[in-house]
Length: 337
Image 1 (cartoon, rainbow, N blue to C red):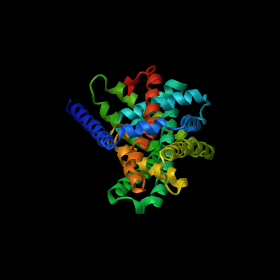
Image 2: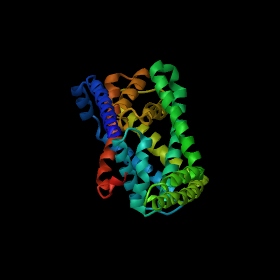
Image 3: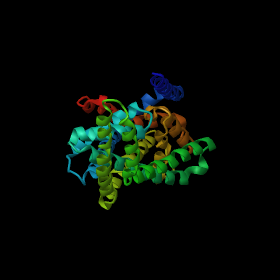
Image 4: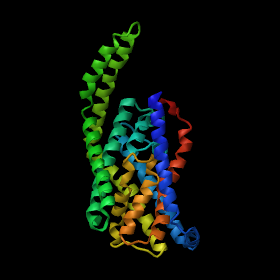
């Protein structure tokens, strides 16, 4: 009970931090000017934003198809349901990594995959995602570090380093899951001392070793397949680099602002959004917007332009898909989480 109360208090605190951060940002926004700018945005720009956003979503769906491909072929619609549901759950939890815990159950429900294969696919998706994000974020920091405040630079450097650490840990653990068999056996041995049910429970626990062995083989099949990495990298780049970069560039241009050189804008954005890995607020809400605002203000973009642009980009790229993920999640028994 104490743990439950503590977890509840921590969650409330994290939501509180996010709400406060959002509130502080919103106090700096001239809503009348924002509405005027948005209303004067040309239909061509609005249409382009829609096309870029849909293309980014399709690219994101494709990353799931890539890691599942060694086991089965799935329609893009199924990959979309998986991605939207996992994204929805991610926004309810304080970190992207914690939200990925739900993914094997989602894959199992949508594709009928064995849990071992679904766990391997999820682990590979998480590990490859983290490595690619770390590389892109590092490139972004390398080109902008001398224009940021020390505090923001340290925060982004920490989150970028954690992406590399997370990616390495997940990938190494995935190909060596059988190392946990000794821990499983020790747990089973202790369980046998429980009167009446001990032997039965221990047998169930020992069954985990079958899953770890199968999952290890599956993970190695994914991690060792260069075509999976290539396909995943193509989808990831489209979803996390190209689409957000084009969206923000279109909005900056429409608002009469710019970042030079424009070709590096997507990398700046990746670095600015890297704080979503840190378990500061659920889905990085509030903190991500505040950090990204600080980064682009440091790059010379007026804050009255940056704030609405970042909010629009986050809404189109993160919050709207997360809301869309609520619907497919209704068909799943999330109590297993």
